[in-house]
Image (tube, rainbow, N blue to C red; front, side, top):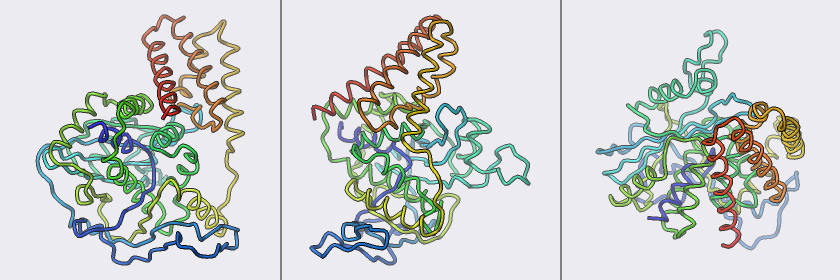
Length: 406
């Protein structure tokens, strides 16, 4: 059971890309390859570099094509629990968040199977703008009309009657989730790969399909792992890291029931469909922790060739902005706890320090943010908020200590 809990942490992750393992006869018809051109670059061959200096001999990717035939998906029956996974795009401290990744995980408890419905961000939906603006897209519904309206829009697009739980997280939180899943040394590069759309000919359709496949792979890959106490700790940490209405007991009950009814991670027990329904061909990649850096380099190469390079916020400028924000809050802490909360609540909710790659500096930023906020909440007589922050800080420290001892 604890191994399945750890697998569930993977499904809460992120905005991501995937690898689809070798298809078997049990694989649902809609995800069988119609053409497979497998690149096996692990063979002992001379090192080859392309024009950009990328070592192509270590680029380990299965690149095949699948045709999604929406009418052929399995139709399980019985109890179902729907969990909405949303990747929110918002800048440091910005309260606005666009829904850039939209996936409904459907846990069919009696059938022991999981369906993943992936919805492109630009799917038409009423975001409250004039029709002439071109802004009425699902990504803008979350930002402009709030969570409840967004979840209603998702239900209509996905053709489901309810969403039982929601899980939302931003860029920094996704970094933390990826690290929990094993991408400890290259979480930032991994997330960049998982969010990429410009490098694909199918654009956002390919990206959202990749993200759904990553969730599928996370479930399948981790179901047989035994994580012991660390599995339970990781699940508690993951649920506190994200914004969700799902409790630890909710997650355990859901997974206990799923496993009791036969879920083992078999290929035929999970599948990905896109909605609105479409028939299209997509590439299927196998993304492993060992492959991500090479994939990231290939994406950079293609974007450069297309002339789509742009100046991005670097890790140094991001860290400087975070440091300045904390310093400003510290100057206000003696006289104005309310101003400290105004400045740091959103960065705390975003777990902004997780984008800092140096672990020592990351810990220092986290401690300063948590201490300043906790003290300020105590001063304005909100002990509940202060305790919640202290509990999260302690849990993150415990998770890091467990990780270091592993």
